[in-house]
Every structure is written in C-alpha cells, then in structure tokens.
Length: 427
Image 1 (cartoon, rainbow, N blue to C red):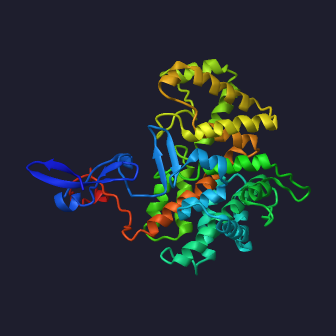
Image 2: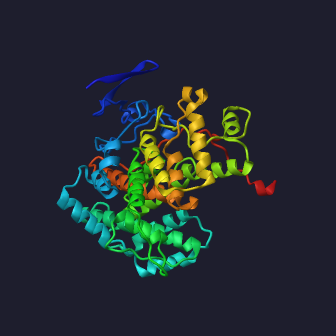
C-alpha cells in the first residue's frame, strides 16, 4: 500500500493512500487526529471523501456518469426507471423473473393508508409540494412502526418497496391538493410511470389518455436523475441514516436538502428565468450579452455545472429527447421558444464555448416537464422521485457496511475564549 508523508514541525505522519476501481486516489486521514491531535478543514466537504461506494461513478472532467458501471446513455436507451432502481439498490440488472416480481411488489404497495390521506387536508392550498412531500414521507414511518428497523434485513426490504411504491402516489396527491381536485387512486393495471401520469392528470369526470411517448419521456427523465454520487441531498440521507433513523426519516431529510435552489430547485429557476425574459420583452441576443456582462444583475440559469467541467452527459441525452418530444407534441409555447433560442445563441457564442458553459440537465428537464404539463412547483418533486432509488441505494449500502460509523464532522472553534459570567441585567 502506498503512503503519503505529512510533516508537521519536527514530526512525520504516514497516511495510507487508497485507490478506487476507476483509479481515483485518496489520502486516508481516519487516524490523523488520534496520531497528531489535528483535524483537516474542508469547507463544504468539496475535497473530502465521506465514504467508499460501489454505486455511481462520476468524472466531471471527462463528462462520465455510470450506474454500477453501466454508462448512463446505455441505460437511458435500453432500460426503464424501475429496472434502474433495482440496479442501483441491488447492484445488478434484474432478470425477467426478478424484474416481474419487483414491479409486482411496487404495484401492490402504491396505495396509502386512508388516515394518512387526511393529513393532506391540513395543508394550505398554496403549500409547496416539497414541504408536503417531506412531511408525508416522514409520516409514513408512523404507520409501519413494526417494520422500520434499519438493522433488520426484512424491515429494510419492505421499507424500500413501500417507499418506492408510495412516493408517486403521495406526489400526485400533493399536486391534486394544490389545484383543488380530488385525489386519483393508483391503478394496478398501469406501470410505474403511466400510473403516476394517470394520478396526476386524470379526473373522475372523464378518461385520461396515457401517451406512451410521454411515459417514455418520464422514464428517461427519472433515470437521468436516479443517482449522482455524494451530492448535498445524498450526503444528508447518509448522515441522517448513520444515526440509525428509519429510512422514511432519512429520505424526508433528503427531500428537504433537495428543495434548496442551489440543488434540486435549479430546473425551477430555469423556468422562472424564462418567464422573466418573456416579461422583459428583450431579444435573446441582448439577454446573452447581459449574461456576459459582469456589471449586470442578470444571471443565466441552466448553463454550466458544478461537477461537470465539460458537457453534462445527461444533457446530451435529454436534449435529443427534448427535441423529439416538442416536435411530436407540436407545442406552441413562447417560453419554450425562448428556451430554444437561448440554447442556440449560447452554444454559438464564443464566450460560453470557451468557458464550457453548456446547457445542463436542469435546463432541458424544465423544458420537458413544462411540455408534459407538469407545473413549475412540481419540478423539484419530480427530481426527488427520480433521485429516490439513489438515495435508497446509498442508505442501504451504508447500513450494510460493517464499518459504518455515525457521521460526526469536526470543527475549528473561532469564538470567544473562556469568559467569566457577568450579570448583564444589573448593568
């Protein structure tokens, strides 16, 4: 095993260097504090590996994303969302029998308890669906208190299936609540994505036609968001789960983390930006110039990525799907027209090309969700539904690791030194 040598004053410390299957290397500082009394500082954990994981490989420099070793473009072309969920959670693609049993299990657990449904009535109409989702997912644990022990393998399995199955039902119910329509129950005759679309858009007064192209597009969107290694929400799920909180509690926390505009709210910001551009009446060419101007307050959403320093591999896939869907549906929407014009202008502009500020997955996903009729305040919920298998897989991997430890980051204190108590009330 290779080692790194750390020299502090007149002392030297040997630190192991570990290497991953894709030749990534890391200095293992696990014993540094015990040996030297020192900790490391890494604001935002941007250069800290919190775990080893066999789930997702991401290379931001080369634009690579693989689930369990399989490139994202192959899964997007050949797989379904429930199959990808199985792959992430159990480490392999299911055979026909396993996939059939998996899908049947998910179908059987789609209904939610009637008492749980009553909780929707307690939220105001204008409540954000993410607030509802976090509350309702956490509340699920109260209905299954006899089977949510993370250390019990049988409890883990039933919790995983229940959560994956009920999440779309709760998401659709939260949408129906926001628009004052009755909740539509799931149908066992429909697959995962078709069931969700039916619960979202059908009404008791008439039948809803489920377009297979729309179902295909939804499968694709969910697959592309299914996991993205140790991001903010995934790390939150792991941190909460490390306390042995039940799966529902850990996922509820992950939903809250995803809600933030710097994380899952990005595709919502894209549509809000497009609305601003439309309201301003400015030509896209002028908008692009403002985006390049350091003195301008305008910021272009949906371009570039914190991790990918080249083109987002998911964006390449979703751009093609976006073009296909918009053409097939023949949608005439001024916001979508602005988005397409903005995309074309930015891709041709040398400023964006030199800085590799390409449209990312959030730019295209927002456009597609709007085309499918999904409202802006549901965009982050859709992100959460797609990310759910990844969160579960990461939680399961951590719980089953015999070396798991409760998360407990260190700090460097910068407050006052010891100060005697003085009663300020007497001054």
